[in-house]
Length: 317
Image (cartoon, rainbow, N blue to C red; front, side):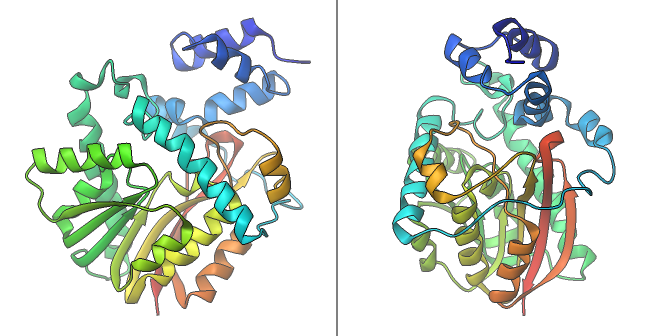
């Protein structure tokens, strides 16, 4: 049965502990197929995960989706379609950068502009914790955790970039949203961090200007791009590694109910903050094509209950 307005409001109250922010949001959320899909969407949201991450990490069942026989994601597209998809995502995230830049990174009311002054230090402190956890991928592989040149892709307001600066001689944060980048630069200056730079890209091909990198990190970023863009970005990121360099990138690999072709995607409106997956088979093909080898692959909770997400740590041979 179609989802009702009251069901949407109750979902906000029970699962997120707040009222919906607008009638438009209520109407958009009513597009869920039924209350089961509605519930799964809320449980998979970054706001829910951000509020209840410690609990959510323990309730995801083991062995989920083992019975899935296929993942109907077609990554093929023309160069023109690739740019159109990239431009659509860039436009959405520029709006986030102008309205709720920190909330768009970690979807929690604590990080909305109205509440940010009391919580901004905690926001950036969370970046240090994330960097420390992900550097353990290298430590477990017997690799150094100090770098010459590092890159944070999809850096937003610099949450990870500024934490990574403590571990690198030079670090660059790259993003598609100039408003986010301006705030990242302001924070770096305010904190006296002089070895971090922030740069925007206007196309996937703009990543070709980066190379000889020791370390790349990207978290909760690629998932907001359609699969062909995810694949193209990941391929170029791995290409930018120098021999021996390591990339740690989080990628959803299955989203329940996703059926993707470029033509259908471009013919229809998408949520402003969309969630997509790139099947593992395609991820492994890109790793091999770029001359990299896996170091460690971990399932993570970034896709919530509606899918699977993995963090891939790979090294350039």
